[in-house]
Each structure stands twice: as C-alpha cells, then as structure tokens.
Length: 74
Image (cartoon, rainbow, N blue to C red):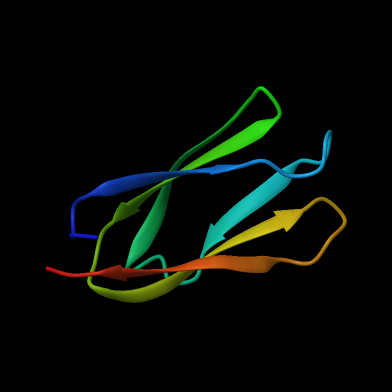
C-alpha cells in the first residue's frame, strides 16, 4: 500500500469471542479504528511510514497470530 493510504480488514472469528488487534511496527502502520458489527470485527490501519510490518489478531484468552504482512511504499 502507499504511504498515507488506509485499509480496513474484516475478521469473523468464533461467535462471541472478542479480538484485540495490533501492528508489528507502529512506525510503518498504525491503528485507525476497531469496531464490532454483526459478529465481525473491522480493523482499519493507516500507512504512516515505509517498510514491512505484520498485523496481528488475538482472541480473548488465546495467543496472538499474525494474519498478514503489509508492505508500505513511498
């Protein structure tokens, strides 16, 4: 993605299990918003630097998992 752009993920996990989200390097991507709707989580990120960073989701009581890697270019 290009620096300055945003992207929104939709994650539908196990029913009733809340998730927390995180960016592997906040100098490259940052969280813009997280919201819940209809049993899914919507996680929006912004590209604030250049490079490569992971995006992680952690179910309550579980272990965090990287679900994608984002490359940000100028």
